[in-house]
Image (cartoon, rainbow, N blue to C red):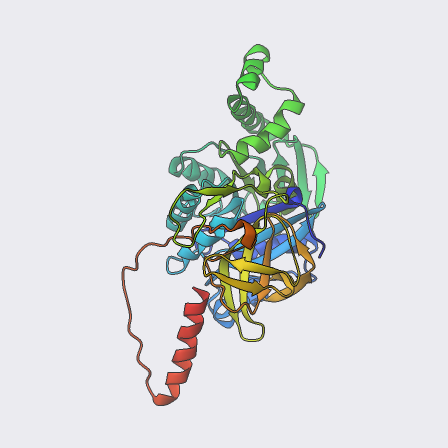
Amino acid sequence: MKAFTTENIRNLAVIGHGDAGKTQLVSSLLHVAGATTRWGRVAEGTTVTDYDEDSIERKVSLNNNFANLEYKDTKINLIDTPGYAAFVSHARPALRVADCALVVVDGVNGIEVQTEKTWSYANEFLLPRFMVINKLDKERADFGHALDSANQSFARSIVPFTLPIGQEANFKGVVDVVHQKAYEFDADGKAKEIPIPEDGRAVIDATRERLIEIVAESNDELLEKYFENGTLEEEDIYPNLAKAIASSKLCPVYAVSADTLVGLSILLDHIVEFAPNPAAHESEYGFANAERDGERITRKYSNDEPFSAYIFRTIADPFAGRINVMKVVSGKISSDATVYNSSRDSQERLGALHVLQGKNLDKVNEAQTGDIIAVVKLKDTQTGDTLCDKAKSIVYPPVEYAEAAISFAIEPKSRADEDKISSALHKILEED
């Protein structure tokens, strides 16, 4: 895979309640974008991001896993996070490095407990959000109910960018409210433009008017234009929608089914068009030393800044060894570079750089600001560490977790189990 510029990268953490369909959504987006040759299904244990035996057997994500796709000259990095209560805290480091959260809501159940929890995590990191209302092909699915539950739960302007055409088994298409077009989808997820249904025109017009109001409210000059003319010109709407999303003044909502692929290509179009790229963030702050005392120092998301990266995930792979996953915060990095671990005061030689596609490592020669890459077999580096240019050292603060509320003791049943328990505990410690 080629190196992508910062402006052509989108990093999304896929969050939500367990069983909302996050892993299937990621797999289906990969399929629609042509990033995989086979459409992975959770029910069959063939998805890209749930690849270990426990996840496949239980049909539950246990930790953050990674996928990426190229769509319209843009690289979209997807971090598939767990949604069950025992594992949901893994979403925190994913949100720490993402530039946007993709909140997946079950179209039958609406907002649930872990939806609210992961939303609060995103609040901590001041993260923009997209919302996807999934499973709209299922019995008792109700887009309006799910949208109402979101508006009641979250104090934010949550407005549909697409509206469903049909309900339950008859959910076959969507209306793109922003561009005022309607589409139906075939079995491969390909969109075909159709006339906008007349029976839903009042809802479509009211939704679009709400979008225009939010854009106008985001800027004093636009608000003045809105009061003068009663609306805004198209050239004022589109770029300022992206700005409103990036400043967390607007959360777009999408009607989709990850099981039937309806609505997914429009979602990808809008991720490219409206989701913030890494440079939309304010500067990241850090400290001059590992003790993290003294004045804060900052780094902009720019290739012109000195290299720095934050390690947010470690994978103990039985074949590749220890894999460290990092986000390049500033500067750019090439294969075989020697960098400084400012958290541990040690030098590290990176070797080859990789992008992760589930369990597969694909080599890249270079990574630019904002990209998410993996390196293998570093000698000292662990989750929460900072890698940087030693001449311009910086230490980024690690993610903080809630204090453990319960502890367990594990005792082997026999001496033969001692080695198995020891290696398993070592893996857990290494990955955490």
